[in-house]
Image 1 (cartoon, rainbow, N blue to C red):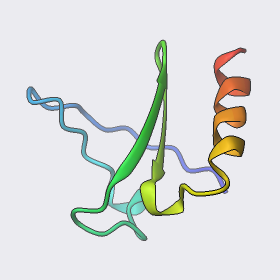
Image 2: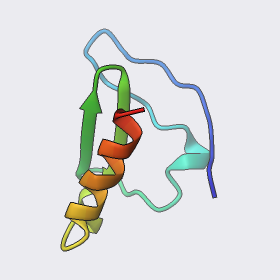
Image 3: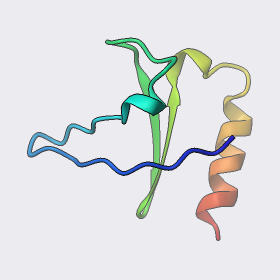
Image 4: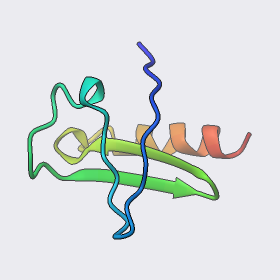
Length: 65
């Protein structure tokens, strides 16, 4: 399911994830961020493993559009 929300970036570069989008994310949990131009993909680092190659392939498909 896709969810969409708006947030702001602080003067320190911090991003607040809207409460409805951080249901399964704990304080202090590491996140992987993939950036290309103006597109960002954020994923829980704990879910990055053998599927990392698939994540990169998905990012390339999104970024190449």
